[in-house]
Image 1 (tube, rainbow, N blue to C red):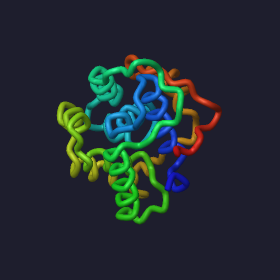
Image 2: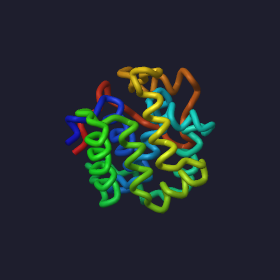
Image 3: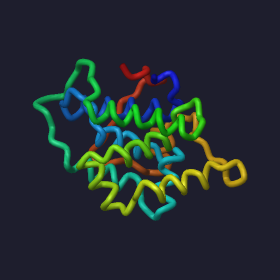
Image 4: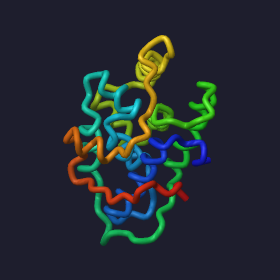
Length: 182
């Protein structure tokens, strides 16, 4: 399934996996995917979030503050919990509904809004983000007659550094190119 993910969408899963390891957990859950999603300020998903007057990294800050740390940094492979797997299935459905072969960050955003786990739902609610207005804004921003935005192919952490945007307490050590999630 991850072969259909755009480079930016793969970065989301990579960031989520790295964050999970950093806090000592063994599974990626929806809240970790949302933290991974907001780390790259240039994606369409984050442009959509920002278009509602919300700073995407503030959502990540809120979620990161709620996370409990495990005993130590987890060094082994991480899995995907039921909620995260549901998000992936919903992202595929969102891409299919949009007649897109690729799964993009905006599909992940819509999937996270649809999945509705307690922590992600609270974060979206606190930010005033709801599924249908977000879906409409994505259509407006990605319509060929409009700005026709798409996810960048550059390294997200370099763009985040340049803009001074980081989620508080989240550090990511990245390879040159993310490995596809397992």
